[in-house]
Image 1 (cartoon, rainbow, N blue to C red):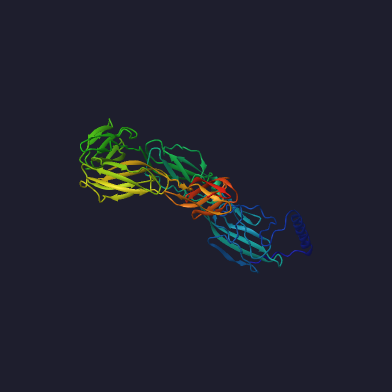
Image 2: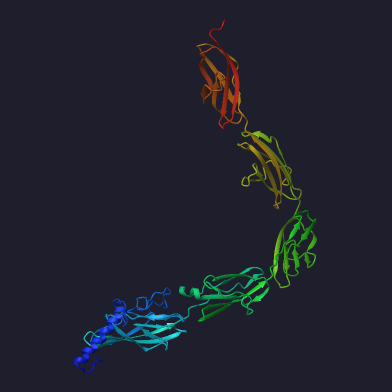
Length: 544
C-alpha cells in the first residue's frame, strides 16, 4: 500500500529538507560513495565476511554461486523492482554467514528481517549477518523497502524467503583396520575418506587411542596431515582403536576399528645332508624357528601326510631317509595362541651321478677347436641330460640329451665335444650330468686361449747394383688369422719406406752404395705385428 504522509506547511517542509541535506553532507564527507547496485542505506561496504561455501574470505552472497530453493514475492508499490541476487543457503556452525541483497533497481533501500533464524541474526548496512551455533534448517524471510523517486509518497516493498541449512563441517571416515596383524607390524589408520571444506583444515585436529583403552596415545594432531596415520603394535592381543576428530569446540566426531595383533611364527627347517643314499641318516634342525612362547613341531619327511617327528623341546632330530626319490619335507611350528608357521626343504634320496671330464688341448690358439671328453655314470638311475658351459658365462649353458655314442646302457655313457673360442682369454668350462630324478654331478676345467702371433719371414740377404731395380720379397704367416699389412724399412733408419696391404713383394732401386739392414714388419687383422731383418749390400758394380 502506498505511503501518504500528512500535509505539512511549506515552511516545515523547507526546514525538513535543510536538515536532511545537512545530514547527507556530513555522511558524504566521512564515507565513500557506494558502487552501483550495492544496496542498503549505508554508503560504506563493511569488511568482507567469509560465506559458508567460500572458505577464502570472499563475499559470495548475492552472486550466481548461490544455490538451493529461494522464493520471492512480487513487489508492492507503484513501480517495478525485484531481487537481482540469491543467497548462499548453506552455512556451518561457528562460521559467519552473510547475505547482501542486490536489487534490480539502483538506489538506497531499507532491509528488514521478517523471520530470523534466531535472535542473533541482524541487519547491518544493507546486509544480513549471522554466526550459527548449531546444525539445522532455518527459514528466513527478508523484506526490502525502496524509497521511490516520485517523492515521499512512493514506496516499493520486496519479499524474499529461503531456508538456510547449517550442516556439519566434518564427516569422519575410518576404513576397517586389518582384521589381524603380526606383532610389530604397522597398522594403517586410513582417514582418507573423511570430508571437510578446505577452509576448515586449520581448525581440525585428530587424536588416537591405539588400544581402545580410553587413554589417548597422541596429542591433538592436524587432521589434514594425519589422514594416513601409522602405528606399530608391540603387544599381542585384540584391540578396538579409537579416533576422535574435532572442529574447534563446535564438532566432535569419533570412529572405531578392530584389530587382532598376534605373535608371528617363523618356522625354519634345515636338512643335512640334502642328498643322501636310501636308508641313510638325515639330520633335522628346527632350532632357528622363532615366536613368542614355546613351539610345538611336526615334520612330514616323505610327503605322505603322516608326521615322522613330533617335538616341543629339543627342536632337533636324526631320521632315517626313505626310499629313492625327491621329497618335499614339511615342518609345521605352532605357538600357544594357535598361530602356525610352515617351512619346507627338499630331500633327495639317491646315488649321485659320477662324472669325469678331460680336455685334450686346454691351451690353444683362438681358431683351434678345444676337445672335451666326458664320462658319466649313475649306479641306480638312468641318465637324462647333460649341460655344457664352455665359457663360464651365466647365459652360456647348452642342454643336450643322451648322446649317440653312449656305452654300457642308460646308466653309463661317453660324450665327446669340441668348441672353438674365437677370442683370447682364460675360461672355466663346466659340464653337468643329470639323472632321471633331477640330481646332477658337475665338473670344471680351466681353458686358456691365446692369440698366436704372426711369423715374419723377410728372406735371405740380398745383393743390389746401384741404379738398377731390385725385387724385394718377404712373407708372413698368422696361425689364427690373416696378414693385412706388409712394411719394409730399407735402410735401417726406423722409417718404413714401402707399405702394402696385398703382399710383401716390391721392386726398388737403391741410390747409394753400402750395406743396409732391411727390416720387414707384418701386421694381422687383429693388430698383432711381427718383424724380421735381412741385409742388402749395394755396389756400383759387382765383379764377375
